[in-house]
Length: 115
Image 1: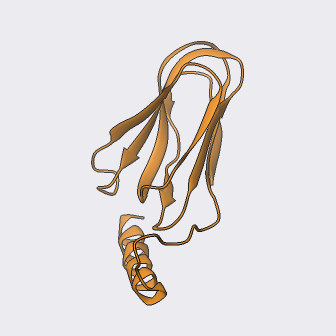
Image 2 (image 1 turned 45 degrees about the vertical axis):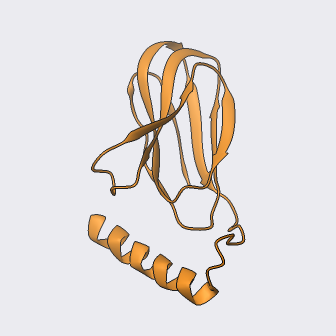
């Protein structure tokens, strides 16, 4: 889980989301700021836009990869954020649990190298 707050521009910690998981994202607080949710499928080498927050809001995402918030404009207040992995969701691709476990082991190895 990655949680924190912005009181100026900056970037949050990242949160990894594995296959068959859901990531709950939330931005709360009273603020005048522009916050982006960004996603990377390249291990953080490049980042893609997912959602823009001008006020408190929440959502859920299921695409495996890295997620982070970026505050690109800040005027006042405090932006609180959270990136929270939720319980695994059942696979819909017909993959067996053994295939999922093998894929997760590969992802874990990649994350260990990136750490």
